[in-house]
Every structure is written in C-alpha cells, then in structure tokens.
Image (tube, rainbow, N blue to C red):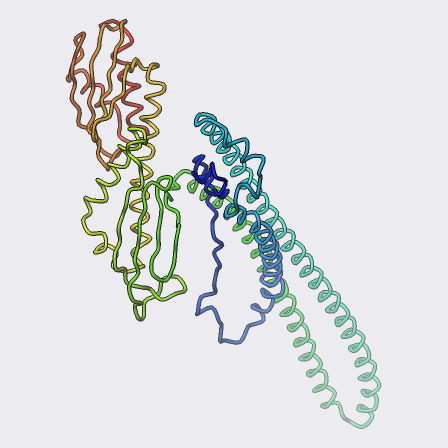
Length: 462
C-alpha cells in the first residue's frame, strides 16, 4: 500500500524487493589505560621513536584522515535510504508500481546481483588500500634506514677527522718534547722526561681504546637497526598473510544474521531472517562497576522473540524454517535467565544467528529441490510440520517410494530420522539406510542425501 501510494522510502523499497543493504557503524579504537610510560626514555628508545615509531604514526594518521574523509562523503549516500522513493527517483517509482509480482522479483534478483558485485568491488578496493598503506610503511622504513645509514657515515667521517687531529697533535707534542728534552738534559731533568714518555704512552692507549669503543658501539647499533628492519619487513609480510587468511575465514564463517532496528534508553530491537523474526530486549537499571563498551552495563528486564511471518502467504519452506528456529528458542526456556545483563547479549545473538543461518540454508536446499528435483528423479517435495516428504520415481530403476525425514533445530549436525513408504519396486528402509549411512552430516546435508539416493538407487534397473 505504501509502495502504490508513493510514501515508501528507498530502504523499504529495497526490503520489499528482498534486497538487504547493511550499513556498518564505524568502530573507534582507544588506547589502554596502562599505555603511558613513566620511566625516562633510553637512547635506544629515542632512536626507535625517531626512525621507526614516528614515521609509522605519521603514515597511519594520514591513512585515518583519508578514511574519515571517505566515510563523511559516503554518509550522504547512506541517508538516501530514509528518503521517499518518489523524491529520489520518481520515474523509477512510476514504472515499478505498474509491474507484476514476478517482474518485481526479477528486478530484485538483478539488484541483488548488483549488490553482490559492488560488495566484491568494495572488498577489492579495501584490499588495495591496505596494500597501498603497507607500501607506504615499507617505503618509510627504507627511507629511515637510508637516513640512519647516512648519519652513521657522517659519524665515521667525524671520527676520521678526529683521528687526523690526534695525529697532528701527537706530532706537535713530539716536537715540543724534543725541544724540551735538550733543555731538560742540559739541566739534569732526565727522570721527568721518562715520566713524560710514560704519560704519553698511557694517553695513546686511552685514545686507541676510546676509538675502538666508539667503533664497536656504532657497529653494534647499525647491526641492531638492520636486524630490526628485517624483523619489521618479516612482520609486515606475516601480517599480510594473516589478513588474507582472516578475510577468507570471515567470508566463509560469517554467521551474523541480525540487524539492529532500534536502540534507545528503554529497549533494543533486533531483526533476523529478512525481518521475519523480531527480538525485543527491554533494559533495566544500570549496574554499578560493570561496563558494556563505553557505557555502564544494564540489567535486562525482559527478552522476547516474535514471529512476523505471514504463514498464509509465505511458502512452506519459510514456514518450516520459522518452526525450527522457534523450536530452538522454546527449547532454551526463559532467555532472560540466560541473559541477565547486557554483557551476555552478544552470546545470545551469536547462538540465535548460528541456528538462523543453518535453518536459512535448509530453506534454500528445499527451494532448490522443489525447483530442480527432477534432475534427481524427485517427483514431489511436501512439507508437514517439521517433516519433509520426498517422493522419488524412476522408470529405469522400476521404483517409486516416499522418504519422510524428521528435521530439528540442530540440522545439519546430526543424522535425520526417516521412514520409507514403498509404492513400486523393492526399495525399502534397508536400502535407504545403507545409502544414508554413507552421507556425512554437514553443509547441504539434505541435497547430498537426495543426490546419493539418485546416484546409487535410481540409475540402473534393480
């Protein structure tokens, strides 16, 4: 009705077409409380600060400023979802309101393809930006290494100049000693001349020792800096590999199935499974000495799940998914006891999201079998409460039988109880049990059961 009357927003229009565009809120990092150092910095700390930490900090600050600017530029596009579709694109609204339901679904499927493409493009752009950041860090490390190498060369030049000055000073001392020796010998001061020669030898030993100490210190410092540079490069390569593996794991095991639709001082509302399930969390008074993020933690007064699915209009697979999810929710009893404060809320969301994700995949499997079951000699797929009845028929194997599988909320982590009703041929529970024993539980369990029955029992004549 809102769509036909023109008061629907862009976000609601996307929801109508089953195109979900989640917008993540930025997360800000904060320094820990014990990061301040009270001890005075050592010379080694100062060298690290000048040639390692400060250049890295400057590059990270520039990258953060660029990201902040990009976020500010994208905020205006995120706000478009709250505007009326008529105001954003009136011509699109006028064309779409005359479309049939099938055309709307087709248009929504195309939009989902575009969303998937743009999501992959954004990940590629983010990866390229990280590659650029790491390249800047590597270039900065190489530049600082060059500066430090130049500084070491200057120190070596100063040492050479000091050594030449010492040689000139020694020659001057020799000439002065020779002039004084004649006078001392003429006045019988030979013992004092011997003592002077001894002091001169001691001075030369001290100067030689000091020179060797300086060279050893500079060589050790240069070796430490080169080692640190190699370690930094190795750590950067290791971090790149970890980032790549973490990104792959995040894409593979992303079970976040909830979205925040409301968060206020009184309550928070979360939606699951395309807004068909709603979780309402009513907040109680704050808890002294306990925090949740940056704010004080609060007690939870009530925690209720509600189904928003219209079962009369929804397909049977969606109703089955709803029943399995609420079977899991009801099996846990009072959720408020399991989640007395806000600190327990993330665990509740993770547990429910895991079940929702598994059941959603089950619904997709059933829809796949309803559409493409003919490839597996599957004549009909019927749903009754939490049972799925599969009617197989194959003329080449001269067999027709109905397989009833009992589903539960822990699908697909356990084997499924089943019954077989034979109509034509000799295929019964014994043959079906032998096939199912070779199907391991896990991802796409139902599809693999149907595929293996088709492959082992319905190909050759029995």
